[in-house]
Length: 196
Length: 287
Ligand code: SF4
Ligand code: SF4
Image (cartoon, rainbow over all chains, first blue to last red):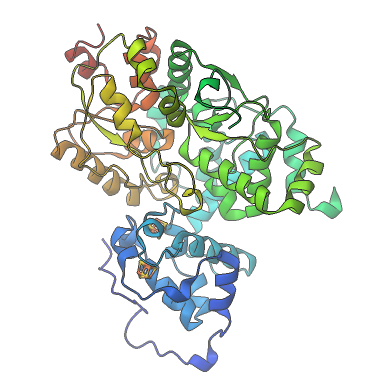
């Protein structure tokens, strides 16, 4: 179990923040891209109290907001929190200031990918990639295919084998993928427009 | 939706990837229940994935277009009914964006070569039931649920994301419907706690304690089972829990169809990883 997270865990008290070196426009950018008004956050920490996944995060949800407010771009984009967040909106529902925190996390994930930041949770990203691959191929998510390709990618064939076998035994995972007939309509989405 | 509550006989139906495969028992029992209630569910012709969490995380535009393709396939003259809360969310969100952005709407109509109706109503099965009204449900009641004690487990998504707050609020209806059919809802459990979603695949270590906590809260209030409207929740609660004794996790449609007198339940219940049949037999609900 991870140690409890404090209000703003900046990985040890020794972290010195030199404001002149931070990204002054980060808060403005995230605000525009996510549509969430994060300057209204007064760090009451309600969001962290409700988040079911907080134990597995390196920063609590309001900690990520703090990073953004401070312009600490790298720390925000490389945090585990943005990938552990599943977008369950528990925090967004509870926030007294009506801030859609899940939207902020989504925006940070997008920037992390676009800017090639170091991804803190590569397994989670790999899983998403396999889901998207399946959608590209069949137009629908084919669970068995996703799990097999995911396992190959992360090279953990035996982790979770029992659950997989039980699901197969109950025919919870189909061998054959269900497909969209007009699959070219789907695959076309994945080709840049200038190549179509 | 065009017209009023009297109009609810023909509905377009969007199953989604889970109900099509891993949660087929939910699909079959839903069809059964709908048939008994006089609803005609017409599966959306050649539907595709709603966009899913993963596509939304990796590429919002592709995810948006995926959702919109489904909307372009829906005939405008009847409501589009969705069962999976996450699919409902993605489809509604995309629909809202189309009404906000006329130029995006035109671009998407050109892309798919089909018109997209901004008046299309996208509704959840629970909304359909509420609009049908209690009389219709009571009329169809064949097997009284006999005081079956259940936790109505909504999960995190149904009717909750901020983007969807404008609509009528159908929160609590899962419990109401099953109360009408003779069940006893126990609400003081973790009814809205997230099931762990996709982390179940990539970070099972995160999800197991969470799922156990949900089940423990249900046991603590004396529940015999959980009833959920989300296929992903159902799966996560079944495969990730290590809590003993195992509580059965039902799809809402299964319990509904059972109460309405459906007979082919063997086929659904045998697909569960936690066998619910002993509980139902003890309650004299199945032979
Ligand atoms: S609940 Fe809202 S206001 Fe409070 S800390 Fe979280 S984001 Fe800030
Ligand atoms: S949306 Fe993300 S940060 Fe908010 S409660 Fe859910 S997992 Fe936690």
